[in-house]
Amino acid sequence: MISESDLMELSMPDAPRMVTEVPGPRVRELLARSARYESVTRGGGGFPFIPERGRGVTVEDADGNLYIDLAAGVAVNAVGRGHPSVLKAVREQCDVLMHSIDITNAKRIALAERLSEVMPPGLAGRCHTAVYQAGSDAVETALKFARAFTGRSQVLAFHGAYHGVWCGTAALTTSYNYRHGWGPLVAGVIHAPYAYCYRCAFGMAYPACDLQCAKYVDGLLNGPYTGADDVAAVVIESQQGEGGYVVPPPEFLEAVKESCEQNGCLYIADEVQSGAGRTGRMWAIEHSAAVPDMLAWGKGIGGDMPMAGITYRADIENALREGSQPSTFAGNAVACEVAMTNIDLITDPALGLLDRATVLGEEIKGVLVEAMSSVDCIGDVRGNGFMIGIELVANRESRQPLSPGVCAEIAVTVLNRGVAVFPCGRYGNVFRLMPPLTLPRDYAFKALDMMIDVFRTH
Ligand code: PMP
Figure 1 (cartoon, rainbow, N blue to C red):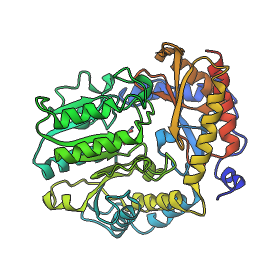
Figure 2: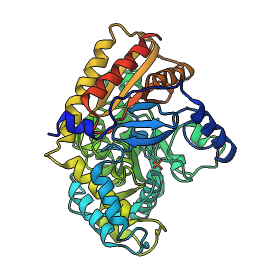
Figure 3: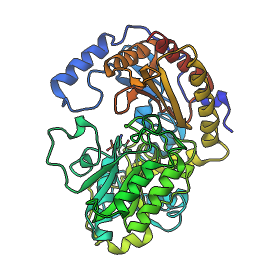
Figure 4: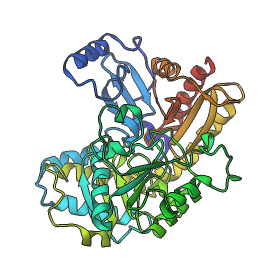
């Protein structure tokens, strides 16, 4: 397993190091220029975090403030920023070929082969891959392919889902901000409650609930008079991301898959956020025995390069017309080479990044659970590996969410201490830890202590 000192070498030393209040003068100026020239629709609003230099799990802003980054560009930098092997891959591939053409290139073919090796059961060794740049591209494409394969049109997604914000995927994503005013959205999308045990839609407690949420999905798909008579696919996050880092009981995913089989629709696992080793396994679905028909990936596979795509059962290929889903930049050879480098690093048993995330993730959760005895606002701690959610509440008994305004204030206070961490969730009250898998222990516990310290004051 990679040593702690080797991990420290991948990041900048002595973080956090704060030299100004945040935002400092240069970041303030950048925010003003952004407001003047960029679209207000970008992520993050006025949140004063603008990385200027990044290495490993550390980033420095334009004012010279050095942060421990528990966000990793929103679960993107699985092996950290600027990993030496990634930089080498970029330099070498830049000299050979960058953009190719969406016919194909040797690197894109090699990436499809490599993905086939690391896919979960059901896809490994018998799949095809289509490569794009964004997670939204990947899920949009999955929907089209599912329609082509099944000859059906409807889609089932879940409350709290985030699958993208393009014209197709916005209909699946449930957040008000990504839907309101953009309609009409694509028709034929049905939503069901996700297995969010902390806030069970059925008011029940696991496991006594006997998985009412899975039964509800089964009723929708396989019961009479539900309107779900033409479902092409169920699209489901194996651990919900933007919706609040919600970990479903494994049997939920397994039951949904069984219902899909009975119905004849496809099970599309969206692993854009939960994949690439984030949960301590290559894919979060591997915490269950559910077998996907398609798997959407993105974020951590590309890391420092934009890269996303879908990998699907080989027989689905028979329903697809040649040349019917092109994309100009698909398969940039540098991005493909970097994706393969990332996969190699994530799965390298000698580095042991997956096992390490599992063990350290449990330790981190342990520290947070222990902190609950003195920090009233921590309502729930959940997650696998380095995909950990801390749900903050105003009242632990009633589980009333801490208000989004207070959570945003907490995020800025934590940032001022030198730790970058962002809330998510349906109520904006779930702080999510999604650091690179290369997070050194020293930085992990330093950041955690600071966060808990700030939580304690609320
Ligand atoms: N699916 C999931 C589960 C995601 O978390 C995201 C991004 N947050 C997407 C799809 C969309 O990815 P992108 O922003 O790259 O389009």
